[in-house]
Length: 394
Figure 1 (cartoon, one colour):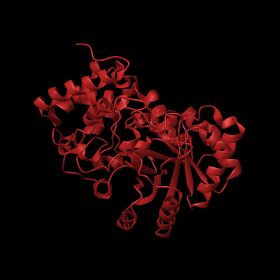
Figure 2 (spheres, helix red, strand yellow):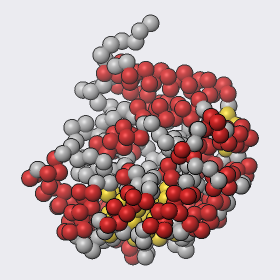
Figure 3 (cartoon, rainbow, N blue to C red):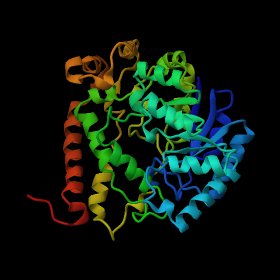
Figure 4 (cartoon, rainbow, N blue to C red):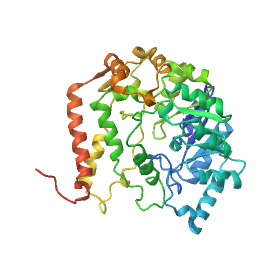
């Protein structure tokens, strides 16, 4: 199995990927005009010069680079004189960096790249939600070189086989994301992070992350959601090799180098004996870089003390209080080869619930405290307190 890993722009990371199965990196500069899958709050502050240098150093080491322009919305400005020119100039700059691929969500951008920059390969973002053969074929007919399938299909083995048989382009899955299964916040969150990463957007990168608050709260309230989240364990990589999946994507772009390498080594060894939470995209002390907090300290937009209360909840580390015993998950994936989770009733099935009961331990006192804190943080956002529309009701 080949791996694609997030670029945190630390040059020392590149040397430590030597002799691993990592074949490429992906990333996006801070203040990108087209936006992507992470808000400016959680993108390392690097500009064009640093990005070009990092890509050059990666290519010297035989590593590919996939530049992300995978925002879900360009505010309909993409068809106007000024914005279209900006788009063309930005992609032209990407082409000069040595990046060999770009990832897009919008077919419009795929067409521009294929026509104007034919030497650049095009990947379809997981944000495009290519979940079936029909969608995969439509994208391949546009000439794309890779489809990054959404996390929701990771355990849909029947669907994955059908897609693999239907298209010739490269297929990639995201291995260690911890999104909710069939997430009801998905559309809102994709648009939020897209606009929150676009340099000239009216929001200026500002976005109190309601979606992440609601998501993390649900995982604590119902730990079974941690099992339903369709991550891929290091031990289960061979199941995807058998299907013909070409590459696994390892996240997160805002992780420190030590944390990224911990993830790489776990998947290389195809075994992890610790707390599975440590490999997933959940808050944990020391694993992530410092957020660009000045973006949300906007006294012209919100009440800063309320924003700090919200952010404190999101920073609460999980691994110290929630433990998923990875060794007890051996054989866990076999069940999904016999069922269709996308069309099943979780309450009637009960499999993930039974797995959660024997593999997850939670500090119950912490759980009660955190649910109250998450409820309060969500109230701050939904009631208008954060915008000083009204004070908290007694």
